[in-house]
Image (cartoon, rainbow, N blue to C red; front, side, top):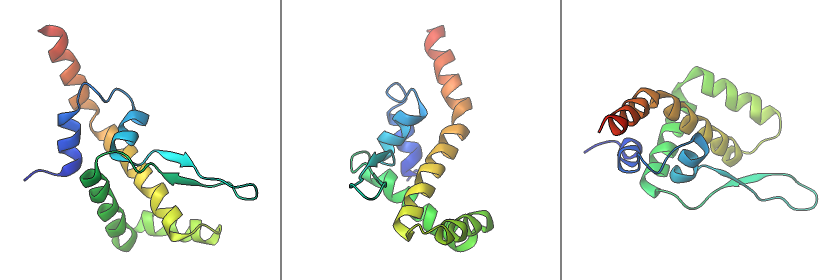
Length: 116
């Protein structure tokens, strides 16, 4: 069985044309959830649930073992962010990383469509 994030990418190749659209599809696009006194965001509840769960698991593992992620979490905790807010930011960052890594495949897909 394949990785849910890659399956989502393959199943929606024509639908996902930008990084924000990719984030919405994965359910990690931030939505303002502010009140009068606080400014904060939450994640979009829409999107592909399995891919979102895979991102969550990846972020949790990174928070335990990946030194740059551990440093980021410590810095954001010192800034007053809560653990759910840090996880939200890390999921969005990981979605952005995956989008960047998929670039050669997106370009190959575009070239193939143009040639046919």
